[in-house]
Length: 223
Image 1 (spheres, rainbow, N blue to C red):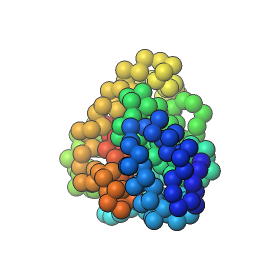
Image 2 (image 1 turned 120 degrees about the vertical axis):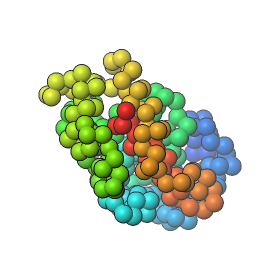
Image 3 (image 1 turned 60 degrees about the horizontal axis):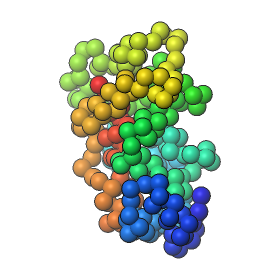
């Protein structure tokens, strides 16, 4: 954890984050100050996190999807994100190694946290994403993926699993299919990603990076 209410980032946390992410000391200190300004308690609650997505998707309902993303970021399961969890999540979704992004994508789909993904869990995530797509955009989707059920079926067929089957983490099986799904993220969901970058943090807005997870994870279900 660390520095939940301190006015400055501790040396230990700074060194740990520098060791485990690609962010510089300058970036981390600036983001910490912004984090403290936006969240004086030193933590982001699920409700605050959902409000992040609500700002970027004002004409849709991102609540369910934001809840899933928050769950995948909340490493210790305490219902909040501290600065360390926040930065590690940011790193994984923007600058992490492919293996890290795959593990994170897997954790997003593993809704019940049992270490495997079921068809119903894929449907849960796809349904949450569809709530973020405007009716007009849905009209332009191919006929075989213009409903959550059709899209989930297409994904599940791609994995070659029976309806009652399960997908194990990519490091247990050939990760090719997960890599393909993750790589497709960058193009498949461009219309959902707001024109913001994590630079917004440096400029004082904690929420500027929200689209980074949207562009990375939303697209993992769109091949």
